[in-house]
Length: 446
Image (cartoon, rainbow, N blue to C red; front, side):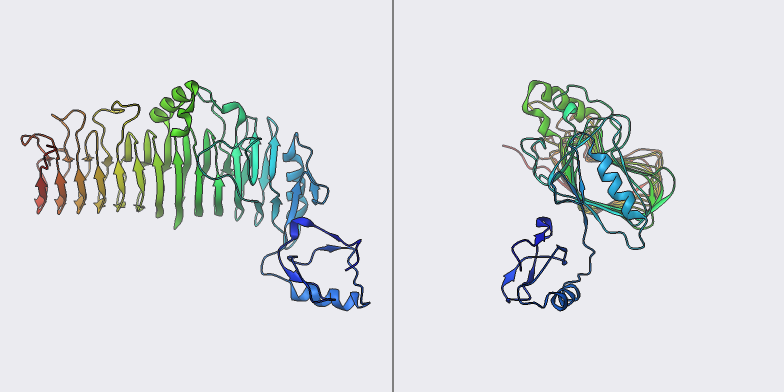
């Protein structure tokens, strides 16, 4: 190719030089002003274009560099991002809008709205638990200053992926400001929303999807949100919330951070789900929040294969949550700064009917293990509970079913009180509970 050929450096992936046979790296054939030294430029260009068409469309690039399709100004970058989205959305086959690896500033009212079938994507994001800031960012990071609107709003059939958030004014505050969610759905009914590989950073609310939304797919989300990590209300029809990893302990690195950590431990929920039906909540990792999973009037959901550590309540379902499956979760209540954090709260708390609580592993629980109240036909089977009642030994139980519950089944559970006294009542099952084949023991610490 001639020396003056202009190639978008962001499109470098793979291909082959058609005139010489030398391997080069271009992706889907976006070459500006290409010419070939052997005089067969036209035919080669046609062959190249046909040979390199991929199953995915080439993206429209947005960023601070001259070669980008839309060049951001560094102060209100949401304006240029929205321009790219709007221009592409009117096409019959809109291309993804890609934010190249960089830090993007959103103004106090900065917001981008993603229409039907559109994709907003970045170049990945910072991993781990450290801060995402101007000196240490990697990937595509949106830096948010505003408190009035969600920076990213999704419509039906839209996708957001591989983007990170950072709230500079929130960093180190003892009491957080109530920012809107980093990613939210458009008010009203929505369907087929896809959110993947997002680092919500220190957002007050990471992701909020509300309003009769079906087939919502939220996966591969991480960060250290403050008030709510993922807030879903009325999602249904085989929606998925999977592979979530939120850690509150990031805030313990300074004096202000220690105060903020305490606030998060008292107020922060990793998952908050209300009125959700037939949704799978799986592979959620949570450390140091008030609640790992909170469900309000949810029905027919699966809450499985999760790991909650150091939360006040790990799984908490209230206001009559019915016919949910809670299985194969690991729950550990740890201590911060050498002292017990919570007193007497249960690892699993259920108000509802027909729930199945099975195959869970609870260890080092400061209060109750499993606490069921105000429902009937619940099943508590095959759970392992080791060391419970570390605070309030006299009143806490491994499994508690209150007297208002009817037709409850408790069986096949393995309970080890460890160093609690033999007189400790490991089970308190009310008056209408089938109790069978539970293994109860005490392994002395000494």
